[in-house]
Length: 142
Image (tube, rainbow, N blue to C red; front, side):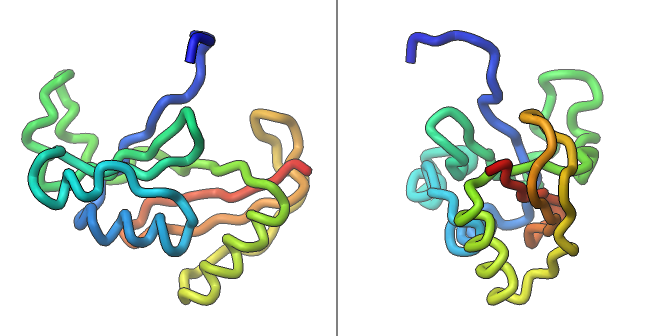
């Protein structure tokens, strides 16, 4: 990629079991695992899941919290200081995700309409949690 405009590259989520978390994101949310095999055999410090060609979610094991020394206080971020992460989907992917979550007995919020986001008001949106308590919003604009 040669376009170097500012964009979201990755988000790091604290998880208790990265392999289980990757399974949830693959099977329930529909995101492709990245470096899962490498993590499983000890060759990568954490796995990720791909949101799109430019963005991934890193699934950081909480067991590594003591190693977070890039900034003073970074170790204390283990937990849920982020309110939520929003995934923008097509209308059909939105419906499919909601169905998979409900089939998997994952609690979901009511659907809301016209909530504001990066591209203006979304037609529909709802919230859910992953198995580690991270809150996600799913929305579509089309």
